[in-house]
Amino acid sequence: LFKGFPVAICDEPSASIGQQLFDFWSRLGASPLYMTADEHDRVVAFTSHLPYLSSVVLRDFAENDETTQGLRGPGFQRATRYAAFLPEIMGPVVAGNPHVPELLREFAKRFEKLASTLEDSPASLVEELKSGPQS
Image (tube, rainbow, N blue to C red; front, top):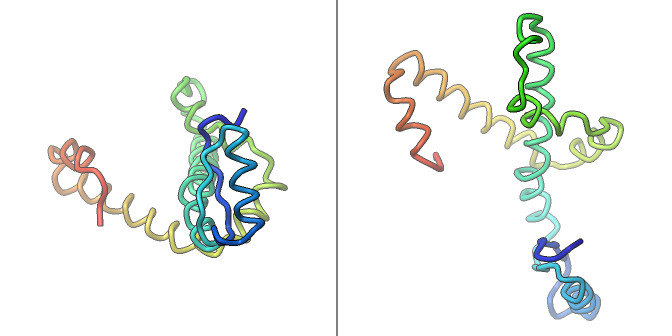
C-alpha cells in the first residue's frame, strides 16, 4: 500500500522517535523524508489543498452554467473528482493551513496572466503553456 509513497516526518533525524518513524515507514516500503512542520504544510498546500480547491471552484463554476450540463465528459469528471471529497473533512484541514491564502493568490495571478495572454496575444498561448514554471 505504501510502496514508493513519500511520507513526511516532521521531527529531527537525530531524535530517537524520528529515526524510529523513519525505520517504520521504510519497512512498509514508503519513502520517508524529514522536513519541518511548516515545510510540510507548504508542500501539502501545493499538492493537496490547491488541487482540491481548484476542483471545487471548477465544479461550482460549471454547475452554475446550465449550458455545460450536456457536455461534461471524462476530462471534466477527472478534473473535478476531488471536489466530491467531504467538505466537513477537507474544509477544516484546508482552513488550518496558513500557506493556502498566499498560494491561492499566486494561483489567481497565474490565471490572470493566462487571460491577458489570450486577450493580447492568443497565438503565444502555446509557448506560454510550454514555458514551464513561471516566476
